[in-house]
Image 1 (cartoon, rainbow, N blue to C red):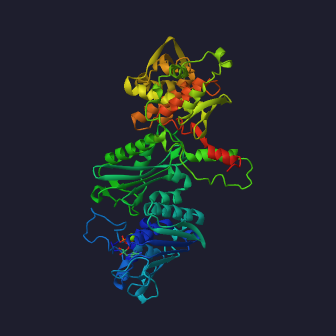
Image 2: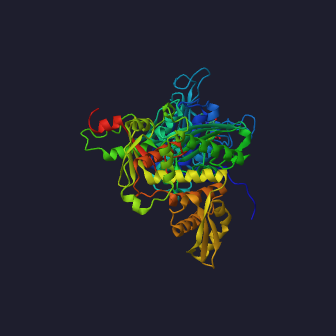
Image 3: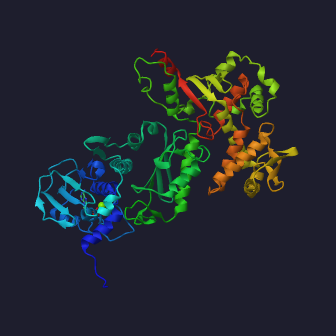
Length: 620
Ligand code: ADP
Ligand code: MG
């Protein structure tokens, strides 16, 4: 056996396996080339999921005859003028995409160079147009062509030269969906470029150029996202973070709708998933995932984009800084808007109660707005609503945390509120409580319209936030039990629980081993006293610990436990509240951070504006 040098075509085919493993990857490379070429408009037309044909046209700077001839050679690039891999300013730099694609398909390029002084869009103003074909790695001679300014690349029969690869492609539909995802990511990062995608003759994406990033986001991720996303900007040590965080109530079942862009490059990085989970841990149940799109602008020398042939991963010099920046910015955004609940929730509800409308859809198309986005305009919100000096209110607030003797439930006095009190309450965002229905929903009248509150969900959030405040100040207030409560558990569960003895202690829950398959509970958080079924609580905590053990942040773990405790400590649905108690709950919600959703990310209240109500009845 002798060592021999592989022929060029084979080298390119091998490289192609890494660079373009499927149609979506080829399209990503070609669209990135068009972006690097300063295109203002990029059109993609594919057939059979891209397996049969891919055509990409742009109106960018184009290429001269000489450049066109070199472009399809391996390691030929116009993008590393200083040979400096530490300072990469373009999306491309490896000079191997065109060569790789050419090695495994039939490639045809037509291009006309933009003349100096010309601008994108002024087609036909450039020099001469040229074309070239490459088939299975073999270049044809250059030919003059007829083509407006820009470049048009046609790939036919991708992977025909590498049948093994061809076999591994998924169904046309799956390949098409991957192409679509790729394009959507690129479109999010480059709102100033128009994109279209056509599949088998049908237009499937059409994004017009815009200077407003959120409007592009809304076109890509849906109107819901546009209306329920909080803009983010932050900066630390020369690293800029911008983008949008979806309100927790706008969640999805997968983490798929979390996008990270680093210097304009869409990257799939576990870092983001971890950060998002940590930032939303308080407001979203595990299994629910928020939608976010974040853009990091970082000096080129602090990030290595040359980790992966398809450039889908990056390495940060200081991952901890990035992590900190993302988590704090997301948390800040969520907390600043904590009282908001996703408008889409209200709209969905509104849709549900709509009477058979003669003109269906008219209602839902009413101009969208975020509930209480003009919060500052409410006179009393800026101050501390709790300190209104109203003794009855203070007492009612206290009562919310006291257990109610079962006998008292049936005949709670429906205290008559004076007209003046009512008017005062109505000025608050959540309004004046008017009724409780089905023992769980508070109906309130606000200046703007009608508010419906889920009392259990709302109270759960209040208890949770109280726990957190206590924990941060002096530790959670505990209350000793006269006789310890013995809870039998599996040996495993006892072991797990005892591992967290110290944390539980901090949270007011003192436990001790009681034999090998039971524990003795000595004290519980005072907020839960008289309210919680202790055995049930302990079992839920065990589940929480088992499920959450790999959470890497202590804070995240503690909060998950607190949230479980809060659920046990909150007023159950089914408890009757009197008007004072209801108003107390509403006022507390207004003061409490993140009260727009319960700990599981469900909304705690929905609103119907007077306008919406009038619409329901055809008055508008
Ligand atoms: P890279 O993008 O890493 O430089 P490619 O193989 O993707 O490598 O492209 C090789 C070269 O071809 C690029 O550096 C660029 O000069 C030229 N090129 C490719 N596509 C286009 C395009 N759409 N418009 C203008 N020039 C292009
Ligand atoms: Mg390239």
